[in-house]
Amino acid sequence: MRLKSLKLENFRSYKSIQVDFDVNLTVIIGKNDVGKSTILESLEIFFNNEKVKMEMEDLCVSAPKREISISCVFEIEKDKKYTIDTIPISLKDEFLLNKEGNLEIRKEWDCSKGKLTNSSLKEYIVANYPACCKESPLVCMKNTELKKCYEGYKEAAENLGLVVRETTNSEMRQAIYKVLNVESLDFDIVNIPIDKIEGKDIWHSIKGDFPLYCLFQSDRANKDTDKEVQDPLKAITKIAIDEVADKLEEIKRQIEAGAKQIGEATIKKMEEMNPNLAKILKPEVSNKAWDSLFSFSFIGDDNIPMNKRGSGVRRLILLNYFRAEAERKSKNERSIIYAIEEPETSQHPNHQLQLIEALRELAGKDNCQVMITTHSPEIAKVCKNENLILIKCIDGYNQIIKDGLKLELIAETLGIMPYIGKLVICVEGENDRNFLLGINQNIAELRNIIDLHKNNISIIPMIGSNLKQWVNREYLKGSNVVEFHLYDKDNDEKYRAEQKKINNRENGSAALLTQMKEMENYIHPELYAKHFGIECSLTPEWKNLDVPHFVEQKIGKEKGLDESKIKRIANGVLSKQMTKELFTKLEVFEEVKGWFEQIKKMYESC
Image (cartoon, rainbow, N blue to C red):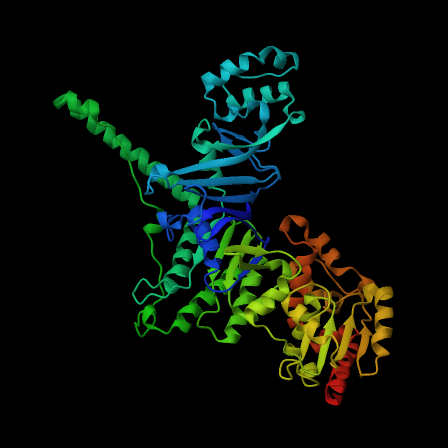
Protein backbone atom coordinates (compact mmCIF):
# COMPACT_ATOMS: atom_id res chain seq x y z
CA MET A 1 0.00 0.00 0.00
CA ARG A 2 1.43 3.39 -1.03
CA LEU A 3 0.34 6.86 0.04
CA LYS A 4 -0.70 8.91 -3.00
CA SER A 5 -2.13 12.07 -1.51
CA LEU A 6 -3.24 13.93 1.60
CA LYS A 7 -6.35 16.10 1.91
CA LEU A 8 -6.71 18.64 4.72
CA GLU A 9 -9.79 20.66 5.63
CA ASN A 10 -9.85 23.33 8.34
CA PHE A 11 -6.53 22.13 9.79
CA ARG A 12 -4.29 24.87 11.15
CA SER A 13 -3.32 27.23 8.30
CA TYR A 14 -5.07 25.14 5.65
CA LYS A 15 -8.72 25.78 4.87
CA SER A 16 -8.68 23.17 2.10
CA ILE A 17 -5.70 21.63 0.36
CA GLN A 18 -4.60 18.45 -1.43
CA VAL A 19 -0.95 17.35 -1.41
CA ASP A 20 0.11 14.76 -3.99
CA PHE A 21 3.20 12.75 -3.06
CA ASP A 22 5.82 11.31 -5.35
CA VAL A 23 6.09 7.53 -5.42
CA ASN A 24 9.62 7.80 -4.00
CA LEU A 25 10.79 11.19 -2.73
CA THR A 26 8.84 14.35 -1.87
CA VAL A 27 10.65 17.57 -0.90
CA ILE A 28 8.49 20.32 0.63
CA ILE A 29 9.82 23.86 0.31
CA GLY A 30 8.51 27.16 1.65
CA LYS A 31 9.29 30.08 3.91
CA ASN A 32 9.04 29.79 7.68
CA ASP A 33 5.55 29.37 9.13
CA VAL A 34 4.01 28.57 5.75
CA GLY A 35 2.77 25.13 6.78
CA LYS A 36 5.51 22.68 5.76
CA SER A 37 5.65 20.91 9.13
CA THR A 38 1.84 20.92 9.27
CA ILE A 39 1.74 18.46 6.38
CA LEU A 40 4.09 15.99 8.07
CA GLU A 41 2.39 16.41 11.46
CA SER A 42 -1.08 15.84 10.00
CA LEU A 43 0.17 12.49 8.70
CA GLU A 44 1.53 11.65 12.16
CA ILE A 45 -1.94 12.34 13.60
CA PHE A 46 -3.57 10.21 10.91
CA PHE A 47 -1.26 7.20 11.25
CA ASN A 48 -0.19 7.24 14.89
CA ASN A 49 -1.67 10.10 16.93
CA GLU A 50 1.24 9.69 19.37
CA LYS A 51 4.08 12.15 18.79
CA VAL A 52 1.57 14.76 17.62
CA LYS A 53 -2.07 14.64 18.74
CA MET A 54 -5.11 16.48 17.45
CA GLU A 55 -5.99 19.51 19.63
CA MET A 56 -8.77 22.11 19.61
CA GLU A 57 -6.16 24.74 18.67
CA ASP A 58 -5.63 22.89 15.36
CA LEU A 59 -8.99 24.15 14.04
CA CYS A 60 -8.40 26.69 11.27
CA VAL A 61 -9.41 30.15 12.54
CA SER A 62 -11.34 30.86 9.32
CA ALA A 63 -13.04 27.45 9.19
CA PRO A 64 -16.65 27.71 7.91
CA LYS A 65 -17.64 24.88 10.27
CA ARG A 66 -16.13 23.56 13.48
CA GLU A 67 -14.84 20.34 12.01
CA ILE A 68 -11.34 19.19 11.03
CA SER A 69 -10.71 16.44 8.53
CA ILE A 70 -7.57 14.59 7.42
CA SER A 71 -7.92 12.21 4.49
CA CYS A 72 -5.28 9.89 3.04
CA VAL A 73 -5.53 8.32 -0.39
CA PHE A 74 -3.70 5.04 -0.95
CA GLU A 75 -2.82 3.04 -4.03
CA ILE A 76 -3.36 -0.62 -3.21
CA GLU A 77 -2.11 -3.75 -4.92
CA LYS A 78 -4.32 -4.80 -7.81
CA ASP A 79 -5.33 -8.20 -6.42
CA LYS A 80 -5.12 -7.29 -2.73
CA LYS A 81 -7.95 -8.62 -0.55
CA TYR A 82 -9.09 -7.46 2.87
CA THR A 83 -11.20 -9.23 5.46
CA ILE A 84 -14.83 -8.10 5.63
CA ASP A 85 -17.06 -10.06 8.03
CA THR A 86 -14.37 -12.80 8.18
CA ILE A 87 -14.23 -13.30 4.36
CA PRO A 88 -11.25 -11.93 2.35
CA ILE A 89 -12.67 -9.88 -0.52
CA SER A 90 -11.64 -7.20 -3.00
CA LEU A 91 -12.46 -3.62 -2.04
CA LYS A 92 -13.24 -3.01 -5.69
CA ASP A 93 -15.88 -5.75 -5.66
CA GLU A 94 -17.47 -4.14 -2.60
CA PHE A 95 -17.35 -0.67 -4.22
CA LEU A 96 -15.19 0.69 -1.40
CA LEU A 97 -12.75 2.64 -3.60
CA ASN A 98 -12.98 6.28 -4.67
CA LYS A 99 -13.56 7.56 -8.21
CA GLU A 100 -9.91 7.04 -9.15
CA GLY A 101 -9.94 3.44 -7.92
CA ASN A 102 -7.88 4.20 -4.82
CA LEU A 103 -8.57 3.59 -1.13
CA GLU A 104 -9.49 6.86 0.59
CA ILE A 105 -9.76 7.02 4.38
CA ARG A 106 -11.24 10.16 5.95
CA LYS A 107 -10.91 11.07 9.62
CA GLU A 108 -13.12 13.83 11.03
CA TRP A 109 -12.91 15.60 14.40
CA ASP A 110 -16.01 17.38 15.72
CA CYS A 111 -14.82 20.57 17.46
CA SER A 112 -18.29 21.99 18.15
CA LYS A 113 -18.34 20.95 21.82
CA GLY A 114 -15.31 23.05 22.76
CA LYS A 115 -13.07 20.08 23.56
CA LEU A 116 -11.98 16.85 21.91
CA THR A 117 -12.87 13.44 23.32
CA ASN A 118 -12.72 9.89 22.01
CA SER A 119 -16.20 10.35 20.56
CA SER A 120 -15.08 13.44 18.60
CA LEU A 121 -13.33 11.28 16.00
CA LYS A 122 -15.25 9.60 13.19
CA GLU A 123 -13.57 7.46 10.52
CA TYR A 124 -14.91 6.82 7.03
CA ILE A 125 -14.13 5.05 3.80
CA VAL A 126 -14.78 7.52 0.96
CA ALA A 127 -16.40 5.29 -1.65
CA ASN A 128 -17.71 5.78 -5.15
CA TYR A 129 -20.81 3.77 -4.29
CA PRO A 130 -23.86 2.64 -6.32
CA ALA A 131 -26.39 5.47 -5.96
CA CYS A 132 -29.29 3.04 -5.56
CA CYS A 133 -27.72 1.68 -2.35
CA LYS A 134 -26.11 4.79 -0.90
CA GLU A 135 -28.83 5.48 1.71
CA SER A 136 -28.25 2.08 3.24
CA PRO A 137 -24.92 0.60 2.04
CA LEU A 138 -25.07 -3.18 1.88
CA VAL A 139 -21.65 -3.50 3.52
CA CYS A 140 -23.09 -1.93 6.69
CA MET A 141 -25.99 -4.38 7.03
CA LYS A 142 -25.98 -7.11 9.65
CA ASN A 143 -26.81 -10.64 8.55
CA THR A 144 -30.48 -10.44 9.61
CA GLU A 145 -31.02 -7.12 7.83
CA LEU A 146 -29.15 -8.28 4.73
CA LYS A 147 -31.25 -11.46 4.53
CA LYS A 148 -34.43 -9.36 4.43
CA CYS A 149 -32.93 -7.20 1.71
CA TYR A 150 -31.78 -10.26 -0.24
CA GLU A 151 -35.29 -11.73 -0.27
CA GLY A 152 -36.27 -9.19 -2.95
CA TYR A 153 -33.41 -10.36 -5.19
CA LYS A 154 -33.32 -14.06 -4.40
CA GLU A 155 -35.42 -15.28 -7.30
CA ALA A 156 -33.49 -13.18 -9.84
CA ALA A 157 -30.21 -14.43 -8.38
CA GLU A 158 -31.32 -18.04 -8.76
CA ASN A 159 -32.39 -17.33 -12.35
CA LEU A 160 -28.84 -16.13 -12.98
CA GLY A 161 -27.58 -19.44 -11.68
CA LEU A 162 -26.00 -17.93 -8.57
CA VAL A 163 -25.46 -20.23 -5.58
CA VAL A 164 -25.68 -18.10 -2.44
CA ARG A 165 -25.24 -19.09 1.19
CA GLU A 166 -27.42 -16.80 3.29
CA THR A 167 -25.07 -17.30 6.21
CA THR A 168 -22.36 -15.51 4.23
CA ASN A 169 -22.91 -11.77 3.89
CA SER A 170 -20.40 -11.24 1.12
CA GLU A 171 -22.15 -13.78 -1.13
CA MET A 172 -25.51 -12.08 -0.62
CA ARG A 173 -24.03 -8.63 -1.35
CA GLN A 174 -22.32 -9.81 -4.53
CA ALA A 175 -25.54 -11.50 -5.69
CA ILE A 176 -27.51 -8.27 -5.17
CA TYR A 177 -24.89 -6.27 -7.07
CA LYS A 178 -25.07 -8.72 -9.99
CA VAL A 179 -28.86 -8.72 -10.12
CA LEU A 180 -28.87 -4.91 -10.11
CA ASN A 181 -26.06 -4.81 -12.69
CA VAL A 182 -24.83 -1.86 -10.62
CA GLU A 183 -21.85 -1.07 -12.81
CA SER A 184 -24.27 0.27 -15.43
CA LEU A 185 -26.05 2.51 -12.88
CA ASP A 186 -25.18 5.90 -11.38
CA PHE A 187 -22.59 6.25 -8.64
CA ASP A 188 -22.21 8.82 -5.87
CA ILE A 189 -19.42 9.64 -3.41
CA VAL A 190 -20.48 8.25 -0.03
CA ASN A 191 -18.69 8.49 3.33
CA ILE A 192 -19.21 5.01 4.76
CA PRO A 193 -18.66 4.96 8.56
CA ILE A 194 -16.01 2.36 9.32
CA ASP A 195 -17.60 1.49 12.67
CA LYS A 196 -20.88 0.68 10.88
CA ILE A 197 -19.35 -1.87 8.53
CA GLU A 198 -20.56 -5.30 9.56
CA GLY A 199 -18.06 -7.47 11.40
CA LYS A 200 -15.56 -4.63 12.02
CA ASP A 201 -12.85 -6.91 10.57
CA ILE A 202 -12.18 -4.59 7.64
CA TRP A 203 -10.65 -1.74 9.67
CA HIS A 204 -8.26 -4.09 11.44
CA SER A 205 -7.39 -5.67 8.10
CA ILE A 206 -6.79 -2.34 6.33
CA LYS A 207 -4.86 -0.75 9.20
CA GLY A 208 -2.55 -3.74 9.26
CA ASP A 209 -1.61 -2.89 5.67
CA PHE A 210 -1.01 0.83 6.27
CA PRO A 211 2.58 1.99 5.79
CA LEU A 212 4.58 2.49 8.97
CA TYR A 213 4.92 6.25 9.42
CA CYS A 214 8.10 7.51 11.10
CA LEU A 215 8.30 11.26 11.75
CA PHE A 216 11.67 12.84 12.61
CA GLN A 217 11.20 16.39 13.88
CA SER A 218 13.83 19.11 14.02
CA ASP A 219 12.78 20.39 17.48
CA ARG A 220 15.62 20.68 19.96
CA ALA A 221 15.11 19.71 23.62
CA ASN A 222 17.76 19.81 26.38
CA LYS A 223 16.83 16.66 28.21
CA ASP A 224 17.57 12.95 28.17
CA THR A 225 14.59 12.32 25.87
CA ASP A 226 16.00 14.64 23.18
CA LYS A 227 13.88 14.02 20.09
CA GLU A 228 16.85 14.19 17.73
CA VAL A 229 18.29 11.12 19.42
CA GLN A 230 15.13 9.29 20.38
CA ASP A 231 13.29 9.53 17.07
CA PRO A 232 15.60 7.29 15.00
CA LEU A 233 16.17 4.97 17.95
CA LYS A 234 12.43 4.52 18.50
CA ALA A 235 12.05 3.87 14.79
CA ILE A 236 14.70 1.14 15.01
CA THR A 237 12.68 -0.61 17.73
CA LYS A 238 9.35 -0.06 15.96
CA ILE A 239 10.55 -1.46 12.63
CA ALA A 240 12.30 -4.42 14.27
CA ILE A 241 9.09 -5.28 16.15
CA ASP A 242 7.01 -4.98 12.98
CA GLU A 243 9.20 -7.57 11.28
CA VAL A 244 8.13 -10.18 13.85
CA ALA A 245 4.57 -8.82 14.28
CA ASP A 246 2.90 -12.10 13.31
CA LYS A 247 4.86 -14.05 15.93
CA LEU A 248 4.16 -11.42 18.58
CA GLU A 249 0.44 -11.43 17.79
CA GLU A 250 0.40 -15.21 18.21
CA ILE A 251 2.15 -14.84 21.58
CA LYS A 252 -0.37 -12.16 22.53
CA ARG A 253 -3.29 -14.45 21.66
CA GLN A 254 -1.78 -17.28 23.70
CA ILE A 255 -1.25 -15.00 26.71
CA GLU A 256 -4.80 -13.63 26.46
CA ALA A 257 -6.27 -17.12 26.14
CA GLY A 258 -4.23 -18.41 29.08
CA ALA A 259 -5.10 -15.42 31.27
CA LYS A 260 -8.81 -15.71 30.46
CA GLN A 261 -8.76 -19.42 31.21
CA ILE A 262 -7.24 -18.76 34.64
CA GLY A 263 -9.71 -15.90 35.19
CA GLU A 264 -12.71 -18.06 34.28
CA ALA A 265 -11.49 -20.81 36.63
CA THR A 266 -11.22 -18.20 39.38
CA ILE A 267 -14.80 -17.00 38.76
CA LYS A 268 -16.03 -20.60 38.82
CA LYS A 269 -14.51 -21.06 42.24
CA MET A 270 -15.99 -17.73 43.28
CA GLU A 271 -19.47 -19.11 42.49
CA GLU A 272 -19.04 -21.58 45.32
CA MET A 273 -18.46 -18.79 47.86
CA ASN A 274 -20.37 -15.79 46.47
CA PRO A 275 -22.64 -16.57 43.47
CA ASN A 276 -23.99 -12.99 43.22
CA LEU A 277 -20.50 -11.51 42.91
CA ALA A 278 -19.43 -14.20 40.46
CA LYS A 279 -22.33 -13.30 38.14
CA ILE A 280 -21.10 -9.76 37.56
CA LEU A 281 -17.45 -10.64 37.02
CA LYS A 282 -15.84 -11.40 33.67
CA PRO A 283 -12.19 -11.76 32.64
CA GLU A 284 -10.69 -8.92 30.63
CA VAL A 285 -7.08 -8.69 29.38
CA SER A 286 -5.41 -5.41 28.43
CA ASN A 287 -1.95 -4.91 27.00
CA LYS A 288 0.51 -2.19 26.06
CA ALA A 289 1.94 -1.65 22.59
CA TRP A 290 4.93 -3.91 21.95
CA ASP A 291 7.22 -0.98 21.18
CA SER A 292 6.58 0.44 24.67
CA LEU A 293 8.17 -2.67 26.19
CA PHE A 294 11.51 -2.24 24.44
CA SER A 295 14.05 0.58 24.22
CA PHE A 296 17.18 1.03 22.18
CA SER A 297 20.19 3.29 22.66
CA PHE A 298 23.84 3.84 21.78
CA ILE A 299 26.41 3.86 24.60
CA GLY A 300 29.95 5.16 24.14
CA ASP A 301 33.03 4.11 26.10
CA ASP A 302 33.07 7.57 27.70
CA ASN A 303 29.49 7.08 28.99
CA ILE A 304 28.57 10.61 27.86
CA PRO A 305 24.78 10.74 27.30
CA MET A 306 23.87 11.34 23.68
CA ASN A 307 21.85 14.45 24.56
CA LYS A 308 25.01 16.04 26.01
CA ARG A 309 26.85 15.78 22.71
CA GLY A 310 26.78 18.45 20.00
CA SER A 311 23.69 18.80 17.83
CA GLY A 312 25.80 17.93 14.78
CA VAL A 313 26.73 14.57 16.35
CA ARG A 314 23.12 13.87 17.20
CA ARG A 315 22.04 14.61 13.65
CA LEU A 316 24.84 12.37 12.38
CA ILE A 317 23.06 9.48 14.09
CA LEU A 318 20.03 10.35 11.99
CA LEU A 319 22.15 10.55 8.83
CA ASN A 320 23.70 7.15 9.34
CA TYR A 321 20.41 5.60 10.40
CA PHE A 322 19.05 6.43 6.95
CA ARG A 323 22.23 5.26 5.26
CA ALA A 324 21.93 1.92 7.06
CA GLU A 325 18.23 1.68 6.19
CA ALA A 326 19.01 2.30 2.52
CA GLU A 327 21.24 -0.78 2.53
CA ARG A 328 18.92 -2.89 4.70
CA LYS A 329 15.53 -2.28 3.10
CA SER A 330 14.30 -5.25 1.11
CA LYS A 331 11.41 -5.77 -1.26
CA ASN A 332 9.26 -7.96 0.96
CA GLU A 333 8.98 -5.71 4.01
CA ARG A 334 5.92 -3.67 4.94
CA SER A 335 5.79 -0.21 3.38
CA ILE A 336 7.46 2.55 5.38
CA ILE A 337 7.16 6.33 5.12
CA TYR A 338 10.11 8.31 6.50
CA ALA A 339 9.14 11.94 7.13
CA ILE A 340 12.02 14.24 8.11
CA GLU A 341 11.90 17.91 9.05
CA GLU A 342 14.90 19.91 7.85
CA PRO A 343 17.47 17.09 7.68
CA GLU A 344 20.18 19.68 7.00
CA THR A 345 19.91 21.08 10.55
CA SER A 346 23.35 21.41 12.22
CA GLN A 347 25.05 19.61 9.34
CA HIS A 348 28.10 20.58 7.32
CA PRO A 349 27.21 21.06 3.60
CA ASN A 350 29.12 17.86 2.77
CA HIS A 351 26.98 15.91 5.23
CA GLN A 352 23.86 17.51 3.77
CA LEU A 353 24.73 16.06 0.39
CA GLN A 354 25.53 12.67 1.94
CA LEU A 355 22.19 12.72 3.69
CA ILE A 356 20.14 13.59 0.61
CA GLU A 357 21.98 10.89 -1.35
CA ALA A 358 21.14 8.37 1.40
CA LEU A 359 17.51 9.52 1.38
CA ARG A 360 17.31 9.34 -2.41
CA GLU A 361 18.74 5.82 -2.35
CA LEU A 362 16.32 4.83 0.41
CA ALA A 363 13.40 6.36 -1.50
CA GLY A 364 14.32 4.25 -4.51
CA LYS A 365 13.76 1.02 -2.57
CA ASP A 366 10.55 -0.93 -3.01
CA ASN A 367 7.74 -0.13 -0.55
CA CYS A 368 9.51 2.97 0.72
CA GLN A 369 8.62 6.67 0.55
CA VAL A 370 10.61 9.60 1.87
CA MET A 371 9.22 13.07 2.63
CA ILE A 372 11.32 15.98 3.80
CA THR A 373 10.95 19.69 4.47
CA THR A 374 14.00 21.79 3.74
CA HIS A 375 15.50 25.28 3.55
CA SER A 376 18.69 23.93 1.98
CA PRO A 377 19.45 25.01 -1.61
CA GLU A 378 21.97 22.15 -1.88
CA ILE A 379 19.31 19.55 -1.14
CA ALA A 380 16.67 21.15 -3.37
CA LYS A 381 19.05 21.55 -6.30
CA VAL A 382 19.69 17.84 -6.75
CA CYS A 383 15.99 16.88 -6.70
CA LYS A 384 13.81 16.47 -9.76
CA ASN A 385 10.98 18.85 -10.53
CA GLU A 386 8.38 16.19 -9.76
CA ASN A 387 9.92 15.66 -6.31
CA LEU A 388 9.52 19.31 -5.30
CA ILE A 389 6.47 20.86 -3.63
CA LEU A 390 6.39 24.63 -3.10
CA ILE A 391 4.01 26.12 -0.55
CA LYS A 392 3.38 29.85 -0.77
CA CYS A 393 1.05 32.18 1.12
CA ILE A 394 -1.23 33.92 -1.39
CA ASP A 395 -3.95 36.33 -0.25
CA GLY A 396 -3.61 35.07 3.31
CA TYR A 397 -3.98 31.36 2.43
CA ASN A 398 -1.25 28.76 2.10
CA GLN A 399 -1.35 27.17 -1.34
CA ILE A 400 0.65 24.65 -3.35
CA ILE A 401 2.18 26.16 -6.49
CA LYS A 402 1.74 23.86 -9.48
CA ASP A 403 2.15 26.13 -12.50
CA GLY A 404 5.19 26.69 -14.69
CA LEU A 405 6.64 29.31 -12.32
CA LYS A 406 7.30 26.70 -9.61
CA LEU A 407 11.04 26.29 -10.20
CA GLU A 408 11.56 30.02 -10.58
CA LEU A 409 9.72 30.69 -7.30
CA ILE A 410 11.67 27.91 -5.50
CA ALA A 411 14.95 29.44 -6.67
CA GLU A 412 13.73 32.82 -5.40
CA THR A 413 12.53 31.35 -2.06
CA LEU A 414 15.80 29.53 -1.32
CA GLY A 415 18.07 32.20 -2.77
CA ILE A 416 19.63 29.72 -5.22
CA MET A 417 22.32 31.12 -7.49
CA PRO A 418 24.09 29.19 -10.26
CA TYR A 419 27.65 28.12 -9.50
CA ILE A 420 29.30 27.40 -12.85
CA GLY A 421 32.81 27.86 -14.13
CA LYS A 422 33.84 28.59 -17.67
CA LEU A 423 33.56 24.91 -18.66
CA VAL A 424 30.61 22.58 -18.19
CA ILE A 425 30.01 18.98 -19.23
CA CYS A 426 26.58 18.36 -20.75
CA VAL A 427 25.17 14.82 -20.76
CA GLU A 428 21.76 13.29 -21.42
CA GLY A 429 20.64 12.46 -17.89
CA GLU A 430 21.47 11.94 -14.23
CA ASN A 431 22.65 8.36 -14.86
CA ASP A 432 25.29 9.57 -17.35
CA ARG A 433 26.45 12.18 -14.83
CA ASN A 434 26.84 9.49 -12.16
CA PHE A 435 28.77 7.27 -14.58
CA LEU A 436 31.30 9.97 -15.47
CA LEU A 437 31.84 10.97 -11.83
CA GLY A 438 32.09 7.32 -10.78
CA ILE A 439 34.83 6.36 -13.21
CA ASN A 440 36.68 9.69 -12.85
CA GLN A 441 36.92 9.48 -9.06
CA ASN A 442 37.70 5.76 -8.83
CA ILE A 443 40.16 5.21 -11.69
CA ALA A 444 43.47 6.97 -11.00
CA GLU A 445 44.51 7.02 -14.67
CA LEU A 446 41.41 9.10 -15.52
CA ARG A 447 41.49 11.27 -12.40
CA ASN A 448 45.16 12.15 -13.09
CA ILE A 449 44.17 13.53 -16.49
CA ILE A 450 41.64 15.90 -14.89
CA ASP A 451 39.90 15.66 -11.51
CA LEU A 452 36.30 16.76 -12.07
CA HIS A 453 35.67 17.25 -8.34
CA LYS A 454 38.90 19.08 -7.53
CA ASN A 455 38.52 21.39 -10.52
CA ASN A 456 34.85 21.98 -9.67
CA ILE A 457 33.63 21.15 -13.18
CA SER A 458 29.85 21.04 -13.36
CA ILE A 459 28.08 18.18 -15.14
CA ILE A 460 24.59 19.18 -16.31
CA PRO A 461 22.06 16.53 -17.37
CA MET A 462 20.37 18.22 -20.34
CA ILE A 463 17.34 15.93 -20.33
CA GLY A 464 15.16 16.00 -17.22
CA SER A 465 14.08 18.82 -14.96
CA ASN A 466 15.64 19.08 -11.55
CA LEU A 467 16.11 22.48 -9.98
CA LYS A 468 19.87 22.56 -10.46
CA GLN A 469 19.45 21.90 -14.19
CA TRP A 470 16.86 24.66 -14.47
CA VAL A 471 19.06 27.18 -12.67
CA ASN A 472 22.16 26.24 -14.61
CA ARG A 473 20.42 26.25 -17.98
CA GLU A 474 19.03 29.72 -17.36
CA TYR A 475 22.54 30.83 -16.50
CA LEU A 476 23.97 29.35 -19.70
CA LYS A 477 21.59 31.38 -21.90
CA GLY A 478 23.57 34.19 -23.48
CA SER A 479 26.77 33.23 -21.60
CA ASN A 480 30.21 32.49 -22.97
CA VAL A 481 30.50 29.22 -21.07
CA VAL A 482 32.36 26.52 -23.03
CA GLU A 483 30.40 23.26 -23.23
CA PHE A 484 31.62 19.70 -23.68
CA HIS A 485 28.71 17.48 -24.76
CA LEU A 486 28.81 13.68 -24.52
CA TYR A 487 25.77 11.80 -25.84
CA ASP A 488 24.88 8.11 -26.23
CA LYS A 489 25.15 6.48 -29.62
CA ASP A 490 21.64 4.99 -29.22
CA ASN A 491 20.12 8.30 -30.38
CA ASP A 492 22.62 8.51 -33.20
CA GLU A 493 20.40 10.29 -35.77
CA LYS A 494 19.07 12.84 -33.28
CA TYR A 495 22.45 13.72 -31.80
CA ARG A 496 24.46 13.83 -35.04
CA ALA A 497 22.71 17.11 -35.87
CA GLU A 498 23.25 18.44 -32.32
CA GLN A 499 26.90 17.37 -32.43
CA LYS A 500 27.44 19.29 -35.66
CA LYS A 501 25.82 22.47 -34.27
CA ILE A 502 27.93 22.42 -31.11
CA ASN A 503 31.20 21.70 -32.95
CA ASN A 504 30.47 24.61 -35.30
CA ARG A 505 30.34 27.09 -32.42
CA GLU A 506 33.15 29.57 -32.34
CA ASN A 507 33.68 29.58 -28.56
CA GLY A 508 35.58 26.29 -28.27
CA SER A 509 32.63 24.04 -27.36
CA ALA A 510 32.76 20.42 -28.52
CA ALA A 511 30.50 17.36 -28.74
CA LEU A 512 31.16 13.63 -28.98
CA LEU A 513 28.97 10.57 -29.44
CA THR A 514 29.87 7.35 -27.63
CA GLN A 515 31.08 4.43 -29.73
CA MET A 516 28.99 1.98 -27.72
CA LYS A 517 25.20 2.10 -27.45
CA GLU A 518 24.85 3.63 -23.95
CA MET A 519 26.87 4.23 -20.80
CA GLU A 520 25.60 0.90 -19.42
CA ASN A 521 27.57 -0.86 -22.19
CA TYR A 522 30.80 0.64 -20.81
CA ILE A 523 30.42 -1.44 -17.64
CA HIS A 524 31.97 -4.88 -17.93
CA PRO A 525 29.52 -7.83 -18.00
CA GLU A 526 31.28 -9.55 -15.08
CA LEU A 527 30.14 -6.71 -12.78
CA TYR A 528 26.50 -7.24 -13.84
CA ALA A 529 26.92 -10.99 -13.32
CA LYS A 530 28.33 -10.54 -9.81
CA HIS A 531 25.88 -7.84 -8.63
CA PHE A 532 22.66 -9.32 -10.03
CA GLY A 533 23.58 -13.00 -9.80
CA ILE A 534 23.00 -13.68 -13.50
CA GLU A 535 24.89 -15.28 -16.37
CA CYS A 536 26.46 -12.41 -18.26
CA SER A 537 29.60 -12.52 -20.41
CA LEU A 538 31.36 -10.38 -22.99
CA THR A 539 30.16 -11.17 -26.51
CA PRO A 540 30.64 -9.48 -29.90
CA GLU A 541 27.06 -8.13 -29.56
CA TRP A 542 27.77 -6.38 -26.23
CA LYS A 543 28.70 -3.09 -27.90
CA ASN A 544 25.17 -2.53 -29.24
CA LEU A 545 23.18 -4.57 -26.71
CA ASP A 546 20.27 -2.99 -24.78
CA VAL A 547 21.94 -3.86 -21.46
CA PRO A 548 19.21 -2.73 -18.99
CA HIS A 549 16.59 -4.72 -20.90
CA PHE A 550 18.90 -7.72 -21.13
CA VAL A 551 19.55 -7.68 -17.36
CA GLU A 552 15.84 -7.24 -16.56
CA GLN A 553 14.99 -10.28 -18.67
CA LYS A 554 17.69 -12.31 -16.93
CA ILE A 555 16.69 -11.50 -13.34
CA GLY A 556 12.93 -11.53 -13.90
CA LYS A 557 10.46 -8.79 -12.90
CA GLU A 558 9.44 -10.64 -9.74
CA LYS A 559 12.51 -9.18 -8.04
CA GLY A 560 11.10 -5.69 -8.53
CA LEU A 561 13.98 -4.41 -10.68
CA ASP A 562 12.86 -2.65 -13.84
CA GLU A 563 15.10 -1.07 -16.46
CA SER A 564 15.20 2.35 -14.77
CA LYS A 565 16.38 0.84 -11.47
CA ILE A 566 18.96 -1.28 -13.26
CA LYS A 567 20.26 1.89 -14.96
CA ARG A 568 20.58 3.64 -11.59
CA ILE A 569 22.47 0.70 -10.09
CA ALA A 570 24.75 0.36 -13.11
CA ASN A 571 25.72 4.03 -13.25
CA GLY A 572 25.63 4.79 -9.55
CA VAL A 573 27.16 1.59 -8.12
CA LEU A 574 28.83 -0.53 -10.78
CA SER A 575 30.60 2.40 -12.46
CA LYS A 576 32.62 2.85 -9.26
CA GLN A 577 33.87 -0.74 -9.59
CA MET A 578 35.25 -0.26 -13.11
CA THR A 579 39.04 -0.36 -13.58
CA LYS A 580 41.45 0.41 -16.39
CA GLU A 581 41.83 -3.35 -16.92
CA LEU A 582 38.07 -3.86 -17.33
CA PHE A 583 37.83 -0.96 -19.81
CA THR A 584 40.75 -2.50 -21.69
CA LYS A 585 38.92 -5.85 -21.87
CA LEU A 586 35.98 -3.98 -23.39
CA GLU A 587 38.44 -2.38 -25.85
CA VAL A 588 37.22 1.13 -24.95
CA PHE A 589 39.86 2.47 -22.55
CA GLU A 590 41.46 4.69 -25.18
CA GLU A 591 38.05 6.10 -26.07
CA VAL A 592 37.15 6.82 -22.45
CA LYS A 593 40.58 8.33 -21.79
CA GLY A 594 40.01 10.52 -24.84
CA TRP A 595 36.87 12.04 -23.25
CA PHE A 596 38.84 13.31 -20.27
CA GLU A 597 41.78 14.43 -22.41
CA GLN A 598 39.35 16.53 -24.46
CA ILE A 599 37.84 17.97 -21.25
CA LYS A 600 41.33 18.81 -19.93
CA LYS A 601 42.30 20.52 -23.19
CA MET A 602 39.14 22.64 -23.15
CA TYR A 603 39.52 23.44 -19.44
CA GLU A 604 43.10 24.66 -19.85
CA SER A 605 42.19 26.84 -22.83
CA CYS A 606 39.27 28.60 -21.07
